[in-house]
Image (cartoon, rainbow over all chains, first blue to last red; front, side, top):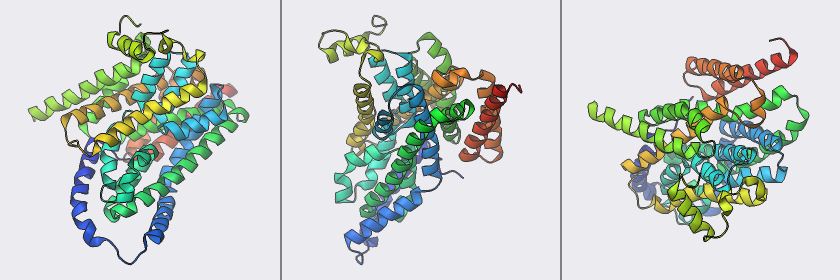
Length: 269
Length: 139
């Protein structure tokens, strides 16, 4: 099952899918449903379809995040606000870890920002999906805040079945259920971190990095795969050289290695 | 640190108006809520920029592929660092437990044809069992 199969090619593919879709949209638009009924049923459909493996993975990882925040000695309200506001686990983990390190503010900001840098290519591929719809396009700066790996994959998989006007409500429903599970997970993890034995608490924290390790290992694009391997190899030694600045440096160095290695191999082939 | 990173020092001066070197202060000197909202803004930056240029850019451009590679590498570096050199509660576990559980998870992950759920759950279960066994003095 590859519900989390996302790679460099997939967002290029979906963007070109959109080009094709926009042609057929005006023909397939249903005149039978009033916009209100259509929106609410689409919202509900999004919630129902979101309430499966993606939402449970969000909840499980956020249990780990809640426990991590608790172990850092920060408040529950801060845990929830950071989950909803940052809404990208690697950035959230980087935030808490840099708080624990007592690193300089600027390096913390750069680390959090760099850890969530994937949102740039992700939003570039997601936002064009709302272009055929006036209401959907107007809310694009709000939709992009709701975007996570799960909601991104969730909408892109569904796009061929939906008209542009249906995508906003569907996406909102899908993201709502993911947010609810994220908040529930954060709260659960935060509360349970205090009462559960050490081996359970520490496992919940362990789920964070390990879940993402498998999400990325499921990726098949060569450039991304080589960037991941180069990053995994250079990350720890760079951290020993400079704990505060290792993440952005590692990203640029290992990312360039992956990108240029792929380019050289493409030319050679 | 500042002297070795010229562009960042300039950025810092620009942001602080040449005043006290605030951004070079440790996070422990700032209110956690201020830092959360800075972190939220730092994340929204990518979302907002992506949205702003979504209508204009060629999604197949080489620059975007490089950007994506940088993002993946930074994430892989972060994950590897957390597993090998953790900070906080994971620091109290053994390196061999973390890496052993990860390795077993990867074996099952590939056996079940790259199933993310099975990989995650098996690695987490093995890790929990190892930490529990150490706590009980079994290993």
